Image 1 (spheres, helix red, strand yellow):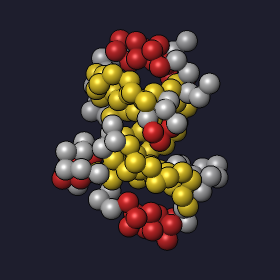
Image 2: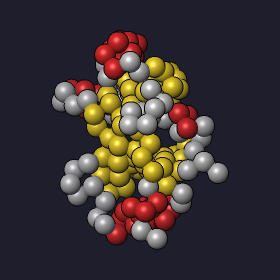
Image 3: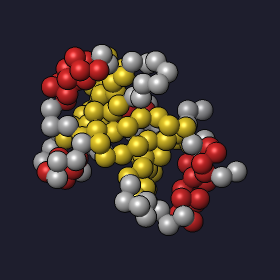
Image 4: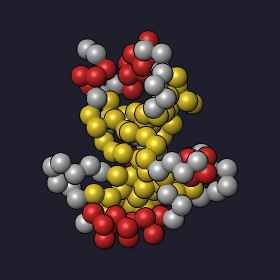
Length: 140
């Protein structure tokens, strides 16, 4: 089976300076509400919150704010980049990584458990087209 056939869109990640301020903006501007969070992830050095409408046609957005000066999110914010990654669930993370590498995607660190997903593993890929993709191990 090809990787594309197994992918399930999960969310769009948006880097923000202030999580509370961003939550209010998405509530007032788009009518979104908090779906999950806020959650602090010490491994990723971020605080995150998932917002959306939980309706067809409305994506889930993960608002991500740095919790320390050396947070990876800080680099995106310094360059004024908001939307910086898309996340896809995959049934078999190992197989997805193998197929991604065959397509010249670079793995950025080994898979790690994520607080935001109840310990399910995530990993990051950088594509040849300069896109950052998060792969999320599907729930079992």
